[in-house]
Image 1 (cartoon, helix red, strand yellow):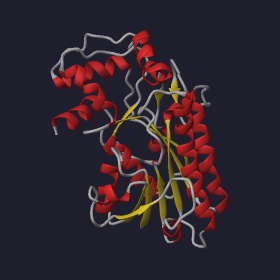
Image 2 (cartoon, one colour):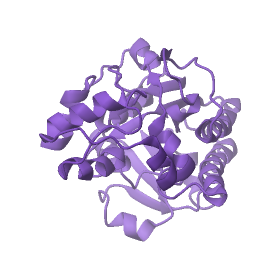
Image 3 (cartoon, rainbow, N blue to C red):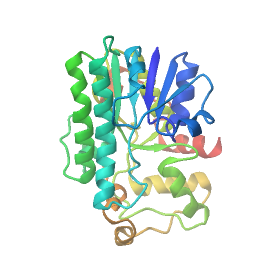
Image 4 (spheres, rainbow, N blue to C red):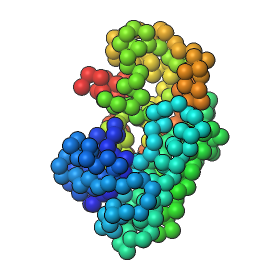
Length: 304
């Protein structure tokens, strides 16, 4: 297939793009920084500039694409959530998605599928019970952000394009993401659970996120909302205990919630609350997780 990818130059893209090439796909990567990205990606990837919000020369690639993978958006954890930063987080996702959907609408030959990123933050804090794709929307900032993001993507369905909304949990992988930020305190022997430790911590190995994308790309039955989380749920305490064991470090120094509130402000909700996310749709469609359990996933990442 010819696959157009946005937001593919970071942590997730460093695994996704090479796998698309291995699978034999022709890849066009849309980015705001084409010069710097070209030196970091496979030379077979065609890198095109876009601003993430307006129609431009990049739109010609939508015309001949078989699929579009949209992962564009301002980092959720990059800066403190001021009112201006929260607006940037929302606008970057909605604007990019609107631009993609508009380009698809104008194309005489439309791609067969749009795979659009979202997040399990859609559900908000859920203290108990399984959270499947049918679970209601929450009432937090992340819930509003993901809802608006998804609504922008749903507009593509009027053009007869299959839509997959990947509600992604915390992605674990080497060299980036949440795990990279959690390693230092453990390596300094001061690691431990965050907050009460009882909150759910939905996670997925980056290989399974990429696997889910490739699965959705080739399986025409996959559509709608899809939770991307490992089948084995864990609490924050269980996750930190497993991380400590993998690193041969103790997990004894909990970080109190009020400390996070002071340090991070409203952003602390991402770490102090969670959901027991169940990948019901992926399992129903027949996806087989490479890393369904936490300990082997951490061992693969940290001992590879």
